[in-house]
Image (cartoon, rainbow over all chains, first blue to last red):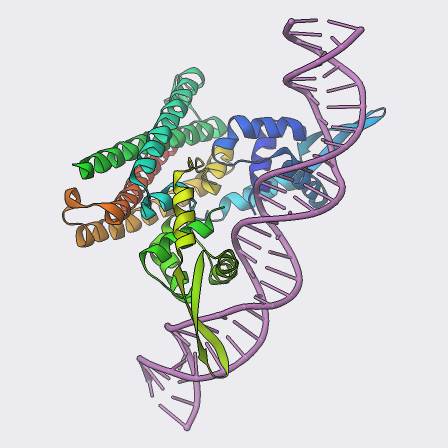
Length: 178
Length: 178
DNA sequence: ACTATTTATGCAACTGTTTGCATAAATAGT
DNA sequence: ACTATTTATGCAAACAGTTGCATAAATAGT
């Protein structure tokens, strides 16, 4: 009930092959919804049966056809229907929080926290670069551009928050050592 | 590679039956790892085979035995081994972010955002109450208590961040309407 | 020329998770 | 007394997602 919709959003921005979609999931959409190419191909086939997407398959002698998927009116309709449903609250399945709560090895948690902090810093830098590059005038955005911008802002908030939490964890662990 | 560990953490705090665990997952651990009772029973059986937990089954004539699960030394060992592994970065599968990015219906997104904001406010209030009640002197915490406290702090950060993002989304959408 | 990577698609097997169903005693509410 | 809820466990089917494998042409690097 969900990767379908992520694919519909991607295809509503621009038509793409399964391969293209896999790369777009790796790049931007993957920040909030990861998917492998195998999974994408499987789901695309199902969506084709549902009539949410159409494909113009290009024969390539010997090889499997190259298919570009296009969202259909029925697909846009489904996207709209789903958008109007209240969204389920996202339960972050957090390995790290489980680990922290268990607190089985303080020094291992400390180094893992430092590693994660560095990841957050790197991702934040990438997001902020995108923000500057693609959205220099955020107050003028409308429609899908506004949506993409606000999604990116969510990522920025998320990473900053992650850094602040890591710092608090490190302070807490260091404090307990004395 | 994960619900097992969440159960080990829960059992390291205190032994419990499958039913108890399901309730504890509903209450506190469920904030970062949801699990149904069916899943918990299945995983407990597997963990028993692995020797990570032991059970003292109490015969109850006619009914299924009542089982209390206790973590074994092998279980504690596995918890320690896992704690020392670097944790996978949590990919929040966020329905809402997909929806926001698609931006298929601004007014639906606006009301969904308001609804989510209210949820964040309510959860934050519950977390803050726990914080005051159970951790009045955070600087004095050590070991598992410190871990639980820092996990709770993560939840507080997460909810505050969620509220801030919702506010930004609402400002953005309202701005675009004029 | 040879080699490695990228483009491009997909099946199969496995693991994980959810949903629906079933059972049944104990307890609390009316 | 009757009814509803809570306690307590679990199977089975369906669905979702991951991992491993396979194919093969085009392109880029040495």
